[in-house]
Amino acid sequence: MSKSLDPRTKIIMFFGLLSLVFMVKDIYWFLGLIIIALLTMFFKKSVRIFLKMLIKFIPVLLIAFMLWSLFYNWSVFRIGNSNGFNVNLGMFMTLRLFTLISISLAFILAVKPEELIRALELLRFPYVLAFTLGLALRHITTMSDEYRAIKEAQISRGLELDSGFLLKRIRNYTYILIPLLIRTIETAEKLTLAMELKAFTLRKDRRKMEYRLSIIDYVLITLIVIVIGFSIIYYNFKGVLL
Image 1 (cartoon, rainbow, N blue to C red):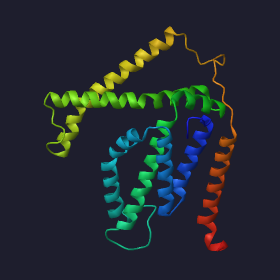
Image 2: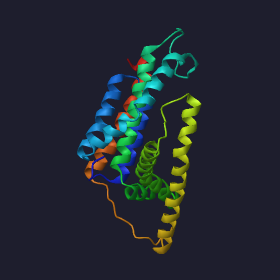
Image 3: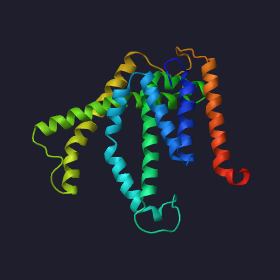
Image 4: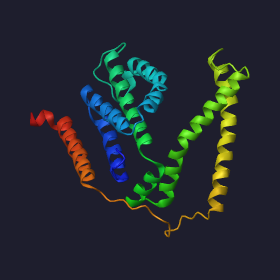
């Protein structure tokens, strides 16, 4: 997903890698996918931001590990008929979730909103849908910064988010979510006004950025198709072919 790649290639690679996350069943596949995400961030010079965002998901990963380890008997991914605390499955599903998060964050940081809009349009998606998705992707970082600023402001006023029982903590977070909702509405109103002042339109007579697939794009698309095809054959027919 480097800077020189066509945005269509980035989207195809993203969904191809996501498909592999749910298809593969070996840990070394997950490690390879995580390395691809790290290399993408290295070439984009966004490794520090990428790692900082990953750290925020540590509580989610810990909760996922506990849930998968304890309640795997009620899961569609259940393996065998054993009872008790299944650490192996918990670690496997947590690693799968970590890989999924890594690839998604790498895609968000590597693809600009305007690239996403144009790529979806070139892939024959309706422009209204492409524009909405691109706009939502663009404002993820903005809303994250707003949330952090509101949270720090409320804490400086004496709001305690980590004390008390669970219900009290949830209730305290309403003092953050309500201002965040108001700021989101204000941002949407400002964006709407700016679009009206600039006479923005969703008609076909818009100025478009030109993109052409290069040899690298064709090589990467072919490679991801081959890898997905190999994974399908390996994991579904290895008992027949081997």
